[in-house]
Length: 125
Image 1 (tube, rainbow, N blue to C red):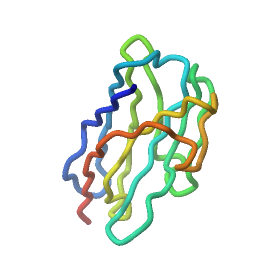
Image 2: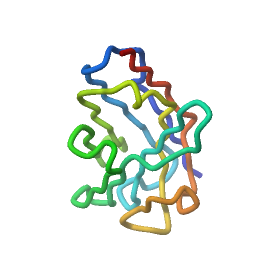
Image 3: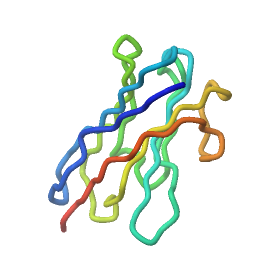
Image 4: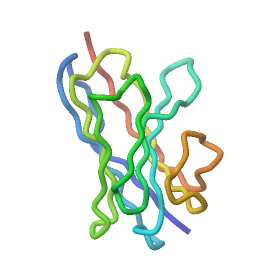
């Protein structure tokens, strides 16, 4: 089993930065891809970013490309999402997820087996 715990959310003004963290426990973290997803009120959960097991390959949703950075520290079993130049449309609950089957991760929720409980990010304009 894997447990994922997100932290770092909060209320910020547009243009500010936040760094989300996702700490994993219970399984070999360094072998697996990680992803970040988000769900805004009244909307479906959507892909934000993903990173392969080594950290060398990353992908981003077009809406966050150039503003968000995903990276990981396998020694600390933690994946991060650095969010810069935040916009009101980034307001959502952010979830991290682990994919045990796909070494590069996926944009699809269904290809992640383990999820965190989410952390709220609110950006005021």
